[in-house]
Length: 473
Ligand code: NAD
Image 1 (cartoon, helix red, strand yellow):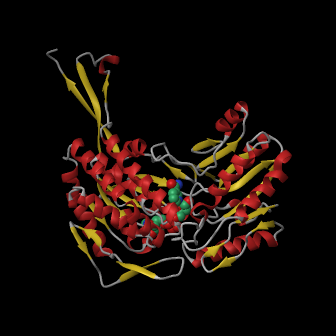
Image 2 (cartoon, rainbow, N blue to C red):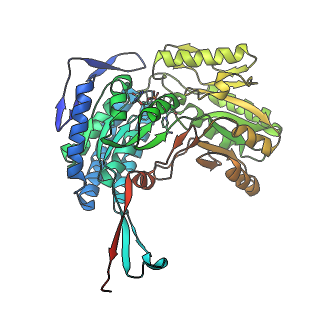
Image 3 (tube, protein in one colour):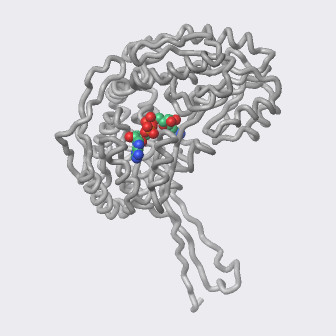
């Protein structure tokens, strides 16, 4: 496939191979973008903004509604691309595609709700004859940088609101999963997006990242990815707006009065969805002592039933990790924890990029798998006795995207929802629940700002004040 720069699909001699992580078969190649491509993208995006900022809300919304319909009509095509280039099973990929339809349609709806307000200039002496208002105008060129784990919907979370707001966009999709993003850009163009409105540059973050990020023509960077890349980008960005959706190490409290069957089902899915490569995947399960043994045996038994293997088979529950190198990293983190005293309850074996769903307990405090984001199919169990202690443990790490609690007590649920230090608390769901239109983002190292279409639109627009001085009034 090709990249899309300055209104044309373009290729380069230097290519990046896109491989299926299940068997390493070659799916396709994409051009490896270089410095000159970066300059082409930046210059074209600036020209593109002169077009997009004049487009009406009606036109922007119609393009997005048409794109959403096209994706829905081609749902299976999109799902196959996601399932092949990423870790997801075909069923997980279908769900991601239907969420993408919702993300793009909600962007269209939100385009119609970019509102301003009148300003009471007469609220301070001197303003008696002044009248005015503010409205929100598009920020300019948005640089969207996206990760591998939701290769379609996380791209839609940037392109949808950027287009709805009237911005032009430069998209740099994940190096290993660019194909779903390319297909999305094809659909947006087919739906009527002016070609100048979007630049799609494929390549290595380490090569094209810095010149894109540092350039003053970019007015906002909307980044989703790991903390290390996030820190690197923030250090180079200079004076521009930055939205960061980063990693986490999500805690779930299972209180003594919880519906255990619900908690087990929900947390097994939440821990192993997309082979655990999920920013809101369950990593730490803090279980009340009174129900610990019962919960543990049900959780381990359910985990053992997970079918792993070929992503394209309907019956497969979990596919491989994105690369064998990543699976080896997780294997090492588990082995190191076990060597330090952790107990392996199930899983722990690797075949190529496939790593078994794994459950650990008795984690030493210095185990990397306890305090870092694992981004793999493993989950840690801890025993807790007291709610304050559980909340303190949940808050103890420098991440805070989503947290969750299973309880049937309204008091416990309320206390947890106030005291958990994070961007959102799920009650009687695992952390792996997200409605695409809700405000989504984290505190501490989990991010800066919020996505979720209405909230992304706020981030991607700026208020402009208009004040009339009316001396003849
Ligand atoms: P990553 O940080 O390795 O890469 C993300 C993107 O950044 C890729 O497109 C990559 O090419 C690019 N990149 C890397 N270095 C760059 C640089 N120096 N300059 C510019 N771009 C650069 O992340 P990943 O492995 O693709 O994704 C996994 C991470 O993403 C996890 O930490 C996960 O938690 C996080 N994530 C967060 C959310 C969220 O919404 N909070 C959602 C999904 C994933």
